[in-house]
Image: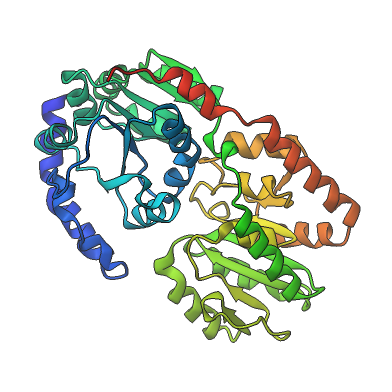
Length: 415
């Protein structure tokens, strides 16, 4: 069993690897070499108190935090919000969503001196961690300073449970240091309890509370009008290897389809463009700004912050990250916009949302890229079924809103 001393020793041993990781990632994203001092608790700016701190590790968590941060600002107008991240894309998403309305920085690695310096510098009155950010030294340092710290929109997959069970004492101590856990679903709550957590409630998924931005919806509607009468299939948030799977399967797709392919990570845009060129697929890049030509088979969605527009412009959405073992990406926004959804077998990051969407008749789950394209073909050939799934998707999302309100009822702090 790993205790705190062994954990800190392991962190020290892994430090060179962490620095090499930053250097390696900077080959594609130079921003990984920016603000490195912040990752060790050193900051060049201060934030006027009182301050509420929200941690959203990367893009998905930052988007999920949007309704919560808006609600915190309404309920606590005298407080500033500090939004912390671990990735440059998460930080860039925070800039796009919140601008100067929040302060932002990187959360330091979980070294005792780094997290202590972070807390002493900013002196938050409360900490709110999103999803699965369980850092033993950070939580302990908050406890020592009487800073309430919450884990919200919390999820714990069966895979993560097995990993944490390798270190039962360390995991249980960290979880019991949290003021409360707001779990997404009953299965998540049960897994947190199994690790030793005590104060766990089930509040639903914050992503149901995200209202699609009207300007982006209008942009997508305009794109759809420009595409013409041909069916539009969206491959949303694809991951490494999935583009190849779909390109192999697309030879059987109707030639009149326009396939919009949007890789999950911007550092892969050029890589996917090279793949399309090697396969001699007629494609255009969204970043070119050119009108999509009639001969174009694939539109490469190489832009950030336009996912809502891509959903608004499609007829059927296939959710990436679910056809290879990446755990799937968010299907809720597609459902909210009334888009029929097809998802693959690897759904462990969104298992509850996928199950509920399928039960509601808003989504279909299949076992391969070939089956996904076949399902899309069937849907596009049956307009009445397409409309039923569209209506079911909107109703499904409407039934599950309210997580933000329930989290705010849970979060308490002084100051």
